[in-house]
Image (cartoon, rainbow, N blue to C red; front, side, top):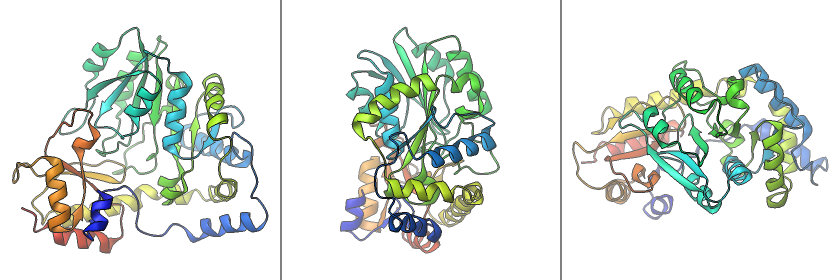
Length: 364
């Protein structure tokens, strides 16, 4: 859809990236690191001062003691961390429970490893998890459950009840958890991020994946990290060593210093929530029925009450005829489930959102 947006000079609310600048100080710190000669490899597992400050951050936020030497690995992005975690533990024929709609790398990365995705739909329209369905889906071949909170594409988040149900299912089993938490700081309305890091009995079986791009508005940097207990992290690093070896040195050095300023990530939820609220206020003047979004860069809009087009046809028409690009949520389902819903990215400049809303008022 981004290519179509460019072709038709449309406002791009499809792809999930900010259109405003990142922090000047972080750019300056990268330049400083390069000018000082930090342009060669750092340690394969990541620059130690960066891992150390991440360990401090994790303890401060979640009261989890994570060893920076053996339990944190810096990666070239969150998607890479997810792939590497899957590759670390999956064997041909293993089953992985995946909730749909889901980020589009999950299913291919499972299948690349010869494993089988067991696809469970989130309950429409609130995109909650049906834990009875999860219980029925577990077999002796179940190797992993994948979670994503805050969720892309829906903006749904895990609740304390979800955590309680998850514990009932996995404790006493050999099932791993892969928790995609790249939007950990993009959570709204004073809600608590239900990280696996909060729960020792879940963390002991989890790979938890993060992205600096989502924290510091630099999605093109492709740098993130994974947290896991020492034993599974050893397997993770065996894969990492021969796929990547080492990540961008100047950026790691810059991030290690920049993370000392905790206010930049602790204030992120309020910053993005203001954009969500502003976009929702604008969308009241359009024909869309907007869903709740409790986190992430995204919010869904339903259009089935005024058009019977498929999501793909509707999204293409909206881009071509009205000049606003979105993503059909059917693209996040293997079977193309179509609930007449499209995804908008609201993590944009105010003027971008205003321009988009002006065009969306005319959609019929």
